[in-house]
Length: 252
Ligand SMILES: NC(=O)c1ccc[n+]([C@@H]2O[C@H](COP(=O)([O-])OP(=O)(O)OC[C@H]3O[C@@H](n4cnc5c(N)ncnc54)[C@H](OP(=O)(O)O)[C@@H]3O)[C@@H](O)[C@H]2O)c1
Image: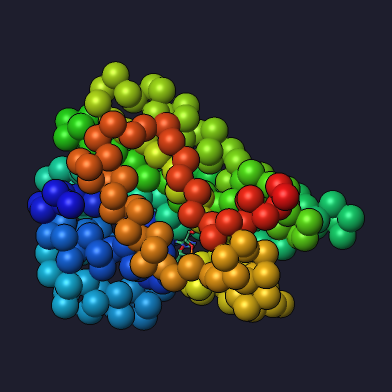
């Protein structure tokens, strides 16, 4: 996929979609920068990246902390000298709605990770992405399009804001040769439900899809690599839905 030697930052690389994307970037000969907080999980992903090839570094960082985000950029440049791709994948889920009185609380606990960190990393990486004519892939969600009935309204709200930001960034950075795109997955088997304290399993989410299936992380990782590669050189400001038909089922 023409990713040989490309320097790629993947946030949220310790599990799920980010872990698989980091492994695939390494397999394609890229130089991956694995960012997350959980050292044990990062170590396990690092082993897989080592086996896959390419080269990589691990940066333990909390993307909601400004000093940490600056370190991510500084350490990437120190180690690899450039930035070609930024994958803004790290996010958390937090439950709460208007009627239970927890909407603002859940918004507050997510906003710095799911949105502000992406704005911050985009701004910090842009001077280097313009040099390499690089690109950004933001990971959103189908919940950004359709208001969920349950208790993840603030999560969807922040993902909708991310979709808007992708277009804003794509419009501003296009003249500098930098592409910015979004991927909106439906349900994917990862640690997200466990990490969010959800009281249901992915099996329940099969019924929300037209295809009666939940995706594996490698399906989303393949799309991330495609958008990050030169094969997608004509794509910017786009939002790729990969949801097993969730949105179509909702609209029926
Ligand atoms: N799985 C799904 O069904 C689904 C559907 C639609 C969209 N998505 C989106 O896909 C993306 C990846 O999620 P996933 O499903 O792979 O979930 P996951 O397995 O829970 O992974 C989330 C990743 O984000 C990292 N992270 C969370 N807070 C962080 C912080 N403050 N600083 C640094 N890293 C942080 C976690 O690492 P640490 O805990 O080690 O920091 C982990 O590596 C997210 O943007 C999510 O919203 C997922």
